[in-house]
Image 1: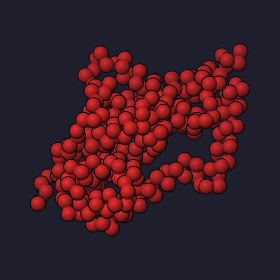
Image 2: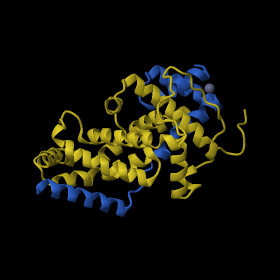
Image 3: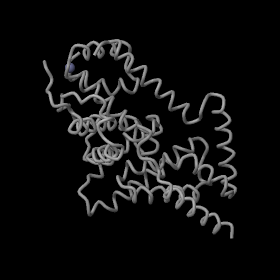
Image 4: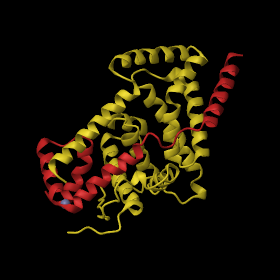
Length: 230
Length: 79
Ligand SMILES: [Zn+2]
């Protein structure tokens, strides 16, 4: 790759981050209004106002559902996780301290619910849950074939969802969770560490493994037929 | 920079944690090493695929059941 195209990639990624950041709260001006409204909603919900709590649910339910589905891998369990998450959030709202983001707080509940779900069904599935992960361990790439161009156009939306879920579920939940929080939900390293009870160093080490293991898994699906001409 | 080193730095690069000097070294390596270019490109693509916001939409019936459940809960609490 040329230096310039790599720079473009970097810029693209940085801009995307900004986009998604502002996307969460529309634009710089309304962002403040939204944040203020959120703390008001939380105060009202804490005082027992169901409508205020429902408004908070409206804001985050789609993201929590998506996160749950990516963690547990099927819609039925994802729905359970979604319901348990908001029920628990409602029950424990008085414990919520405003020194962390409300979203980070419900993500932490959702992740715990999701991991509990996975542990419950561990007996009837062979999926790895806890990290057989040595954070110091070496990961090296095995697949060096490039992918077919525009993989997103090769599959229907449902097929793509299936491929992504299947690949993610080849990873232990401990790695999958870090990837979903850091790279998909775009929580910071610190927020992810807080949500999972890990050190920032452990978050980085797991993210590193997760990214490259997912790349290996997706390579099996998207690699082009021709091998690299060296 | 060796391939092994480049591989170690890609993840840090994606987190915006590389110094200018290491960034340049990584750019340079990826520019002349076809293997590392593939690893770099497909890792970026992997993240992009998972981030596609159109995927995994919440079905309307799941949303309705969630809100019914919560309203029942509010009602119990209010009584
Ligand atoms: Zn190389």
